[in-house]
Image 1 (cartoon, rainbow, N blue to C red):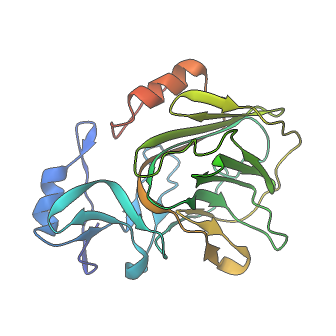
Image 2 (cartoon, rainbow, N blue to C red):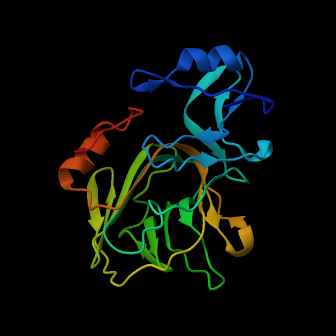
Image 3 (cartoon, rainbow, N blue to C red):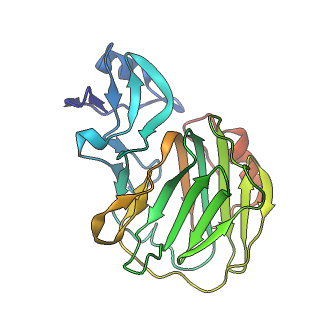
Amino acid sequence: VSQSRYNEQDILFSGSEYDTASLLSFVGSGDGFVVTWYDQTSNNNNATQTNASKQPKIVNSGSILDGMLFDGVDDFFSITNSSSVDITASPLSIYATVYPTAPAGYVLSKNLDAANNNQYAMQVDTTYGLVTILEGASLASTGNNTITANAWNNLCSIWNGSNTDQYINNVLKNSPAKTGTLTSRANMQIGCRAGAGGTQAVFFKGNMKELFIFNTNVSSLNLSKLYNNSKKSTITLP
């Protein structure tokens, strides 16, 4: 965490939650911004933003926010490519807890190539709902306004190699067909669409507090566990 975009300090966990007392002691009555969002697995896929002006906010005037606040203008994180996120075949599951305050934005994007194809991505859209993008193919959930603006939404996309089950708040919305494999591409961005040549676009505006990527098919039991424990900082799946 950075203090008003200057000094930095790691904030560790106290039990299953991050240490809010240490966070407020460090930030004081000012603002706090996230420099590194640490991976809570052994894979070390840490999300980082070294540009102070593009760091999501976690403390506002001495008050801890409910999740990290992305400004919808240029806030985002990058994750260096690794074998654990470079998923090119099914199964693939993505889970996120978000509070969108603008009509559309990318939760995450595995890099876009020159032909505008993402390896995989998740987008929120208050018109088209949850949009999962696999190998450049946009798979939207059915029905308009299925994602609620200015409210917490728990989103999950599960690709099994034939279909992509798309859940909003633990309710299956649809299962559009998607077969084949995914082409390996470079780094990942959180909070925007990754563009060819290192550019970013379609920034997410709102709060985000959970993001999971699995190379497994999240069962209905584990999906319910994720949904029911969405306010906890750490969740253990069998």
